[in-house]
Amino acid sequence: MTEMTPKRPNVLFIDCHDLGRHLGCYGRPTVVSPNLDALAADGVKFDQHFCTAPQCSPSRATLYTGRYAHSVGMLGLAHPPFDWRLNAGVRYLPEYLREVGWSTHLVGVQHVTRDDDEYVLALGFDSRRSPQAAAPEIARECSKLIAELDEPWFINVGFVEPHRDASGRFAGHAAVTEYGVDVPDYLPDNLAARTEMAQIQGAIKDVDDAVGAILSELEATGAAADTLVVFTTDHGLALPRAKAGMFDPGIEVALMMRWPAAGIVGGVAVDELTSHVDLLPTLLEALGILPPANLQGASMWPWLTANSAPPTDRLVFAEKTFHTAYEPQRAVRSARYKLIANLEADIMNVPGDVLRSPITPTMIDEIVSERPPVELYDLATDPGERQNLHGAPELMAVEAELKAALVSWMRETDDPLLRGPVSSPFKEAAFRELGLPASADPYS
Image (cartoon, rainbow, N blue to C red; front, side):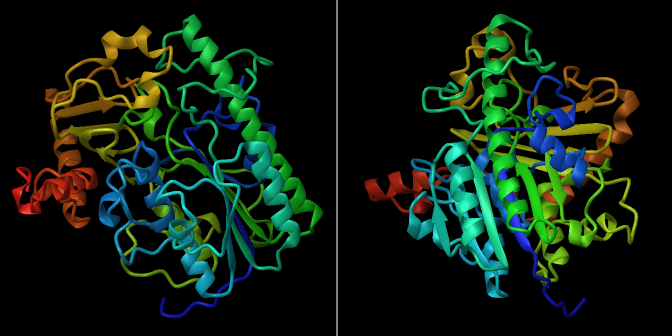
């Protein structure tokens, strides 16, 4: 493919924090999410979609660049004091669209750079509105923008919900128990869990209401048929054994797409493994934009448009290097098995917001534990990932194959862990304060 002619639909790309797949359309019967459920029913729902990092900034870096976080420099969180950045020259989704005629706009949050206009607009946006606003305001601002803009436009909507607030709670969201309370299997079914899950259901309902308002405005303007709508999230819920961990609740995420004018309608469900790294290549091909050679994902567009069958033997990869501390992990998942490599000693792999959950003290004996260098799980017989089968004789061939695949991926993507421990921007700033050169770093 040497030449492509851009198509000109509007693009509405909606993301939110910390949702995982906790929606009615993904089998959570007590979650009130009728608008997102309807979007899934009207378009394509990806049932086995995964992020590439169980934490905000690295996951979003992959989602919007089509390259793994360690390949683009986003090895930790973007906000101070962590201050990770995309490498110079890394291209972000709106840049591709603006270059060929779309106007590009951000409504709400992003989490790949500092939250100042100078940094955010440098990602390729013509404008931004309502940073850090709650879901109802995001819906109002996005609806106004849709009514104002000339086509074609790209609007990136970023909801902060259902992220915890600074207190570690879900303040501002009424608990929702209309259909009961869904406590995921990886949590104890106790009062703390039921209380929190009701609050999370309330935050999700607020996101769903806002998505419904935005899609209604899209219909009212007559632009719905030729608007490519994407909805996804960065990683799993901010709960123990989910966010910031390599178990499935940390890396499984919702993804749905709708574009009636291109035939992306009709309640299609994709059951093959797909990854956030695949989404940007898919969008570029869908929009007729020539992708650069350095993208690390694979376009899903040919099999969404029924031109080819999806592969059945895909692997997905996940990573973490820093969250609130140095916690390097890498993982590879097939349809049945997962291998996790823990590349530094760590006995409490839990982010700060999850520590504030009232559920966490009820699981403390489980959370505070030594992690072995390698973990292997059979997801068919052990979907909760409780029995580490590393070294099991009957799975030696499977383990060898997954290890080889993981190492090959690390080499092909130039994982910095292969060159030794990774230091952080915070450490570099501290060394500058002390007048020490980088070469004095004991990790270098």
